[in-house]
Image (cartoon, helix red, strand yellow):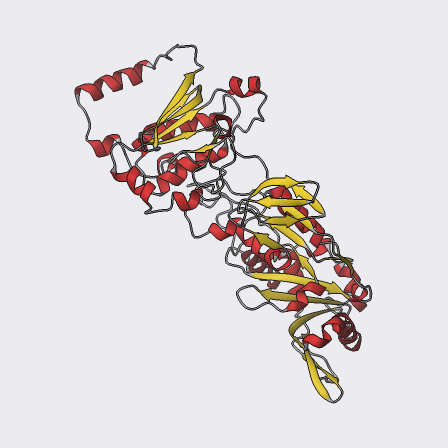
Amino acid sequence: RGCSGERKASELEVFVVDFDSQVVGLIMLQMPNADVVDRLRCCYHLDDYLLVEHHETGGFSNKGHVRLLHWVLNPLFQKYTRRLLQGALRICGKTALFLETELKESVSSIYRELLQVAPRRPPQLKKILREPPKVASFCNIEEELPTEEDLREKERQQLLRNLEQTKALSIVAKKLLSETKIPVNARIVVVGASDCGLSFLESLLSIPHLLFNSLTLLAPGGLEYHHAHHLPLVAGTAAYSHQELRRIMLELRVRILDSRMVHIDRQQKCCILHDGSMLPYDYLVVATGLQDDALHALKIQSMGVEHVTDGYRRVNGAMSAADPSIRDLLVEGGTLVKSLIWNPLSYAVVYGRSLNAYCVVQGLLLRKVPAKKIILVLPSRSQESQQGDISVNAFYEGDEVEKKIHHILETMGLKVYEGYRLLGIQQCTRGRLKGLIFEDHNGGEVVPLPAEETAERGREKRFPAPEAARAPMGILEDFGASPA
């Protein structure tokens, strides 16, 4: 053990574990600087797991905290991990140990004995800076120089908003090391990587006195950040960002299966997967979340789903926003996207009022699909209420934001039809999607155009504009941004 009479903030303390005159382990601890714990409290939900003030002995900050730098132990002595950590903290005179793990590197197995602390989400601020007003008051007042505390706070805020942060925080208190974790061997299977399913797993893993040995997440397509290399296409989760999912170390503590459940055998207590394999369970949690049901109502399955349920059919060209393979089907430069760009007879029809419908439109525009090749069809709101379906409208009736978005889409050349219900799908002789059948819920009335728009269309008929001018390229932000 390295030791000195007067401790410094950057002192390292090394403990060598030996058994029968043989070295079987190595523990390296570092005394943190005075502002380290404040930085961790700013970037992580540390106060939810630890009473920080309780570990600040003698009125000095960070006196009871220590950082674990390196941990090496012979696997034969793995069961003595908690006792070794407790002895190291006792000799150092510390009461709380924390570990910052770089997820891009190999992760030590000691994280199983620690508690994982969730990262904080920074407040979402407007990224476009406003121009300063021409007339400003107090303009002659000299700007005060930032203090040391102001500079530290600025650094913490930068770390909090760093989107490339890949470190995960794990902590453990000396008191918890004295209590043996109770192993839970029950087989818990969670179906669906929705916000509910992910938060349920995180809640189980955050219980300090329980050790779950058999947690399984059935997530078709994997977790959301597995598709981060694709351009955005569908609406993502609102509870976890890609960085947050990585930094709670879910993949290291939960078995994640990229598969789809097609049947539940309650007698044998197992899930039947699409490839015929069986996944046994003791507790089953179904948290698939809200999914698109437009195709299921027509007994049609999305073209990216491998297994076709009895009584359903697959149509080449018909896909759902809930299809986990939709990003691969509409990949940039793929066959379908190239056909939409270059084939004059190919069109993309997006049906629905949910947020996913608008995200798919934006995703197609990001993939360089011309706006004139995209058609947005909105079902009537009264139709959903009559059928008893759960309303998933992105906007309420008469919303100004919805009017603004529709105006931008029509300005770009994209066609928007409102008040139609999808009745069926037509196929060609080769089984491909040929056409769609809609039912008009507008009462057969044509909404009259304003006089200015009627005159403008009359001028377009007499003096047609070039094709590029009538079908501009771009995304919603380019056409919806306010003039500078």
